[in-house]
Length: 227
Image 1 (cartoon, rainbow, N blue to C red):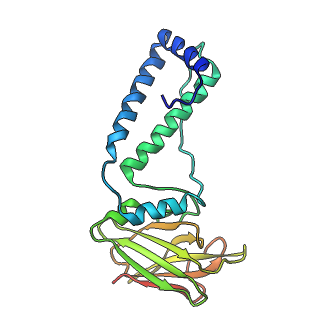
Image 2 (cartoon, rainbow, N blue to C red):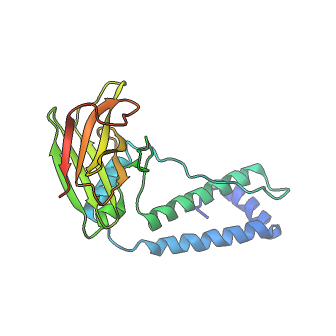
Image 3 (cartoon, rainbow, N blue to C red):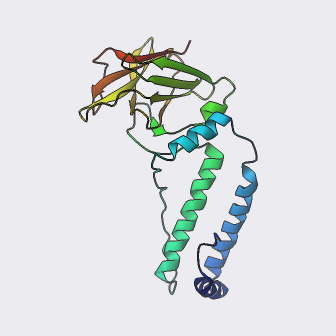
């Protein structure tokens, strides 16, 4: 399907397909999915989405998708089972990127189901998306990209001083209920994307223990006013 095998292996697999209805059906379905993916993403993404993705893929490791391999039919060589699992994983990953926006990487989670990624297409493409930049007292900048419509915010640090292993930067969502932890974020390592409650109007970044704190314990390194 992806032309990743040589002529000898291809001939072996094609002979197997002639005798295995299950595999033949699966290959047919994968071809159909691949054809749909070729025309599914025909919109030109915003320039900053492409720039963020290209910048992030050099430093962010993508978490592998969860694939539950079905019990193979008798007589199928193990190498074909492995190749089939890889093919399904690739198609699933591409489909997820087309349908749900670009989401790369993994990292420390926050209290509100946050995750570390390089960009979130849903935020950047939202009509009400806003970008707020703040300068850290120790140098570097922070950026908060938020959308009330999709109820999400992405916070990233650029050029901010790295901390020792015992400490980390923690993001706080601030509103009438007080500060709520959104999770931990590392400088120059992608954005922390978190749910954005409707009553949150400020975001702060503080220095906390490496495992995070239930409440801020130091003055803010960065502060963003969402208005």
